[in-house]
Length: 234
Image (cartoon, rainbow, N blue to C red; front, side, top):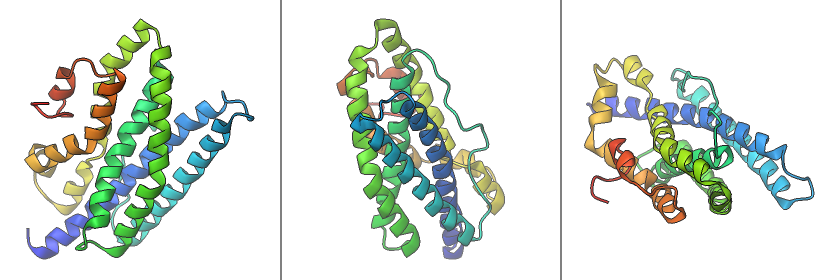
C-alpha cells in the first residue's frame, strides 16, 4: 500500500473498531441491565452497575462522534445485539463482557501509544482504557465468586460453549465491509490469515485466558487453540 492508502485504511479500520465498540457496548449494557433488575438497591453493586451503564453510554457517544467526523461508512456488526442465555448464564454473560473488554483494551492501548496516529483516536482510546479498567476488575471479581457456585452441569456447559462464544466475539471485531468499501480484493481473508493479526488475537486475549485457567473455566486448552484464541504452544 502507498502511504495515502495506509492512512485511508487506518481511518476506516478505526471507524470499524469503534462501530464494533458501539455494538459491543450495547450488548454489555443489556447484560448489566438484566443483572441490575435482580440486585437490591441497598446493595453497593446496584450503584456500581448503574455507573457501568453510564460509562458505556458515554463510550458509545465518543465512538459515534468519531465515526460521524471520520467521513467513513457507518461500520458495525449487522447481527442482533444479544447473547443467548443458557445454563450458567450469568457466568457466561460476564465471561462475554471480559472477552469484549480485554480485546478492546488491547487495541486501545496500542492506539493510544502510537504517535503516528491521529490525536483524537489516541485520546478516545486513552479515555476508554481508563474507564474500562474498573469494568474488567468488577467482571473478574464477579466471575471468580460466581464460578464455584455453579453446579457441575453448569460448569460443563460454560466450559464447552466459552471458546465458541469468544471466537464469535473475535470474528465480529473484524469487518469485511472495510475491505469491500476500499476495494481490497480478498481483504478479509488476507487479514484473517495475517500472522500479525493472529498474534494480536492471542495477545489481546492472553489476560482473559490466563484468568480463565486460574479460575477453572479452561481445563482443556485444545478447543481454544483450534479457534486461534491461545498460542499453539501454551
